[in-house]
View 1 (spheres, rainbow, N blue to C red):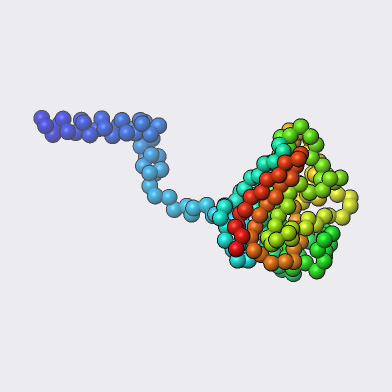
View 2: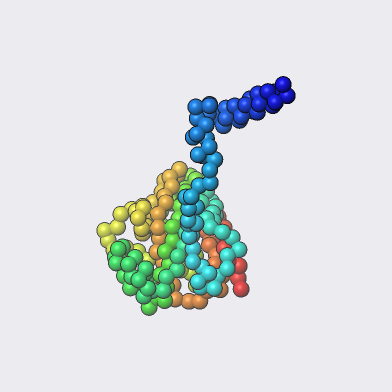
Amino acid sequence: MKKSIVKVTAAVLLLSQLLSMGGGVQNSRVTAAAAAPSSAKPAATVMTDNLFKYGLKKDVELPVTLTAGGLSYTLEKIMIFDFKSKEAVALRKTYKYGEESGLVTDPKYMVWTKFTVKNNSNVVLNTSNSGEKWSLKFQNLKSLDPVYRPAPVKLNDKSAVSWIRLNPGEQLSSYQAYYYKANFNYFRINLFFNGAFAEKYIVEEI
């Protein structure tokens, strides 16, 4: 009699477990298969930067967001390439960048960034007539210099931006290129907009 009670109790327990996982008795094989260890490989980690290659140890992980005057800038990815590397050459060829920027001749590095900017203010963001609103710095007062694509340039180009115009409430996700030739002592982002200022260190000053 005790054996019968044990068998019934075990059957009820198994049934309740199957039902609690969303399946009935008819799904027991599927449930068992799902419970088996998966042989699939875990998803690869997305690389957001290669700062370590240039001696920069992050204090903050990307993405990083700054907000000033109703404008938010999020740096999602930054990759530094030696100017003559195959990666840098390929980017310049794809987007027809020149061999120098407005402020940097004979650059040592090409820097490629992915970013998102949101205009939550009540004024228009227009970089074509009032300059850049964010700057990236690796050393002292030396900023990375944006490099622009030759005309005709599409406004708010999502593949590689040159000029940006965003009305209040608009946002843009794109890529931006810079040239640089100085050293790497830290990594800081500055944001200026609508009379306000913000800064953030991703790598503290050495």
